[in-house]
Image (cartoon, rainbow, N blue to C red):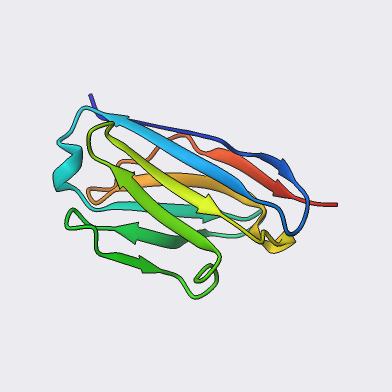
Length: 112
């Protein structure tokens, strides 16, 4: 059974940082592109970052220069380091593999 479990969300002030983790099982993690997506309140799902099996990385313009995606194939885990957070980064953050399997999400709230 494919499982993805996000963690690390929380409440942070503008300008702050958070590190999200996504632990996976049930598929050959090292061979999959992994993605982070988010859903802001009242809005649709937005792709924000992806990392390929060869460690090639791409970011959405909205997070480029502030967020860093990484992966640890030994731990079957993908990470999202988020710095200089803005109120508009508030939302539920999901990790997903390239077949579309997705976790339950972790809430990130950026507010003073």
